Image (cartoon, rainbow, N blue to C red; front, top):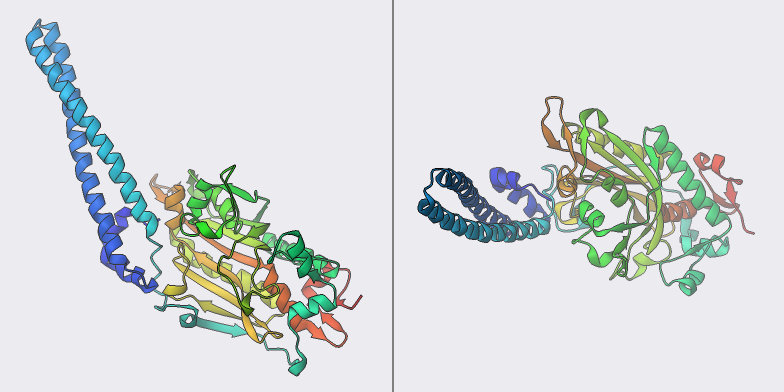
Length: 425
């Protein structure tokens, strides 16, 4: 959530940055500023009345002591009127505060100045690409055909058990999943991240804290009876560990990693891009989260990008890095880099990671602050990134590694598997 103080002091700059997203930001910002003006004016009147009421109460006591009962009774009447007015002003104050909160919840994060303008993924800026495409000729096959041939996963069985978008991994396919999780976690913990195993269901406060609510309410699985939400990413529980906390400067940075299944309704998804592992309702992912001092967050973002890049290099997958344009930027992010790997069987790029800096946007919602060396209280910056999401990594490994002898797997995974090549059963 954007801070109202920033809107007061830099509204034109924020409006210009927000409009990179293709939204009519000026109206929302002006609505927020007007509600803030009313709220502050109302609070000033409330403070004056409460101060006057406190002074009168002292006068009443003194008047009774001096035997001036008639004057004291008159002051009591005035005190009663002030209490009535104070109650009215407090009710108005609560209403204005809630109205302001509702407007602020509608405002997405302001893009970083480096974010390019644009409306969709076609306007994203390619930073660089690495690796060479495998030369598989016209016989390259998509992963769903390979998965069936090598008995790695069963999409029809997933439909029977749950529905489309819930594949069942079997044999070498299940082992490959486990190997990737172990590989990612090992690399992340070696890089200084502490491993967590968080819950897969969270309460509404947690979902609001990281910005999934109200922005993506329709995309989350909701257990209405218990008012819990299935996590779309472990970013949600990991970042909320620090909700409502005042951290010491010495506690920062906080580096967290976790493996979890993730759940997304993906309402409205259809077509060839959802075939096979391309888009699922349940999938496995290893996540990175950092909570840092504001002046360090963009250096940390670069470090997280390098961490994800190193994983893809060790997996020997050709990849490219994109800086997302304003129209493709997530609601909560100030700057996001997407990683895409080349899918040799589908002849297209597949997104496998997003690495984002949220600046103070999530911290403002969750009230995560830290105390500086000179005892000042400041909001932290939060960041997260996929390291990595498994389905499209698996798809790319199968498609790029296919050969007449079987599916060749990268050397980085060999210590985690009882085989180096997936062969037909």
